[in-house]
Length: 296
Image (cartoon, rainbow, N blue to C red; front, side, top):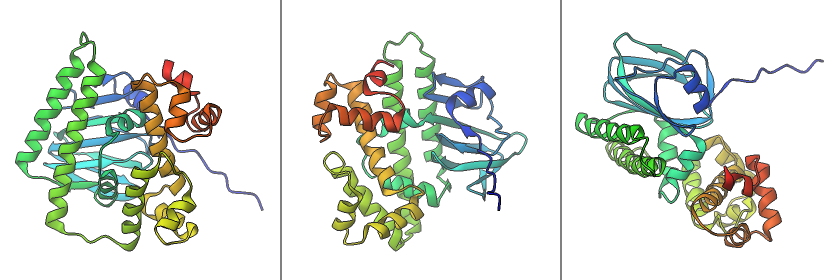
């Protein structure tokens, strides 16, 4: 019997978004922002996200699917679409307005480095791709995003990219605060799987520099590696190893770009046997050597 033939789904990254909708405000391949002055981009094809989408609707109605589930967005709704999710079936009502930011995977990781409770944000975004916020909070977020845009337009600023990254970190904390308020109102209890996921992520956030074995984390949680893997995959659509790699790679990239540590020192800091092991680990997952990434 012939094996079924699968067609690769288009992956949506910052460069593709800019090519399709060049009127947005951008910082190279890291970030692109659209607002009332540019209009919202209309994405015509179902795509797998290779970036993060943060958006706020200020007027009108937008309909789309995330992982085949239909979602409707109206005024004062906030939507978050994570890297790896599939978006499609877009319908934007005439006159709809809002603001949206697309952040590259690497830029987002750089921004959220050391942001606590990232697992809570991730779980909420998976369970609530769209959530409603108070008008006052939405106005505050919009005002802040406009301030970010002004800094993006300041092309003569020597530290423009770093400044925007810092401002976006503040924005993410503000959005986390909105999420916290929504959670307090709903008081939605976690499932057993979500509790395991949150406990696992909290542990990874503390131990990823010294421990990368899935079996070790399973032992600390008093469950089998198989059950941990199945649970994490079901809740987050990623394996435990992928989550561990996420934190390890995020830290390595931050150290390569923002410290004067040698690659040998970074290998020691991250508990790799030697520089060669670090180099292979990094290249296998990123496609570049640590030296190439540092120079890029």
